[in-house]
Amino acid sequence: MYTQMKLLIFLIVILLLCIWYIEKYYIPNFSEVNNTLPKIKYECFWKGFELNYDFKKFCEYLFNDINRRITIISVFGEIPSNIDQSSLIIMYSGESFYKKLNYPCINLVMTPDVDKNIIQMPLFSIYSYIHNAWPILRIPRRLNKKSKFCAFVTSNGWEDRHIRNRFMKQLSNTYSKVDSCGKYKNNIGYEAPRNHVDYMKFLNNYRFNICFENKNQINYVTEKLLYAWMGGSIPIYWGSPQVLEWFNPNAFLYLESDTPEAFNKLINKIKLIDTNPELYEQIHSEPLLISPIPECMDCIQWKKKINEINEKILNIGV
Image (tube, rainbow, N blue to C red; front, top):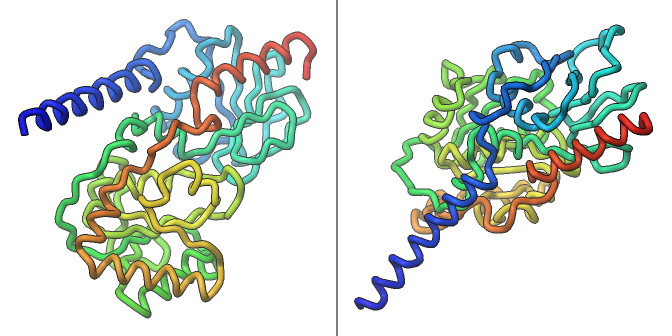
């Protein structure tokens, strides 16, 4: 018994040291960003972006090795004609598409690597760095008492024809009412909080969370799976099948296809888990990340590739 206790203590110490090492040497510390950075100019970002200080801090970290002005262009609105082409131009998109520019640039996007100067950057990974989530994703979650069944949070008006809306309706009609907590078909009388901390607390009341992507596309993995898991629910996910390789497939439920058979199979699985407390706790305790961080989500690799492409643009202009 004494030997087993010593072994357990030793393993706990090793785990804590590993987490400390990851946080100190791998996870970027945005508070230590170089204050001598050239000014970063943002163009064509979403409404309210000016208040997204975390994302801006992340960009400052990402480009702190670049010694010239930087212009980051996104996909919302028309691109101005007076873009400073002497700056390092970045096309950034957290959507399933991006705009191809007519001048040398670096594309930070979520698409297959089929174009020059593309760095694949799934939105999941950006938010994991912003919220310092990578160490957390490796730790089994503690289960608290949950009073509600399933949350569904979306605001897009085209949802009637989307797979996630059809799945939500079928789950509600064949098993138990799903709480629609966004602007779309809201049935709880108020909307889920937009503040990250409050949203996590909100999701923690639910046993499940439907967190489908807008599209099933290679590398297109947004923050939806991350937030569902961090919020304390079991994610019900549809989207890029790469999540089954990148993450622990035992930590979430995956809809295999847009077919009646796949719908019924997953709903039956949800029923089984929801009515079996031991099975629910087993799945809930699974860490989301059990393997090394995928290369396409590795911030160190991003910085290295950004520096390489920047040098290429400076030297040969492509």
